[in-house]
View 1: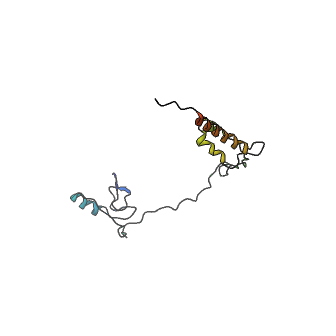
View 2: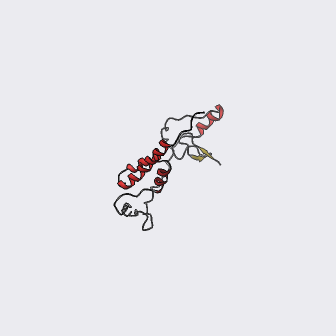
View 3: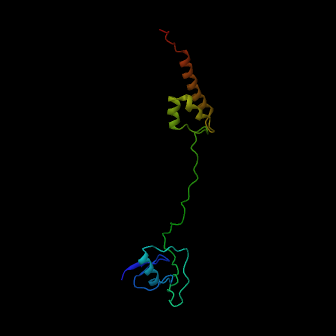
Length: 146
């Protein structure tokens, strides 16, 4: 005895069964023509129920037991309100990456100081550094053409 697949509902059934225990499709008649022709059956629905074959008993699902979970499993961690870090004068601090990049490439990164929260002192220092570099480039002597 081997398990085969029902051509109608595609569930596993015994090879000795005369009808599928799940859908009631007759197997002995369906297997004989397939063995001769060597083709498979294409199904677009279920066959009418065979009244001579008893329906399979499907027990009702057992009532679900409540899952036992740790006490804190369903709760979200309460996040503390994040206080923004401010300088003593109430302005936002200049981040480390912005300090480095404004020093190395002020033409691009000094504009980040225009974001809200930066103080006038921080902006003057950044744009003053940019102006100093532009002035240095402007007054450097150019070598005479050869």
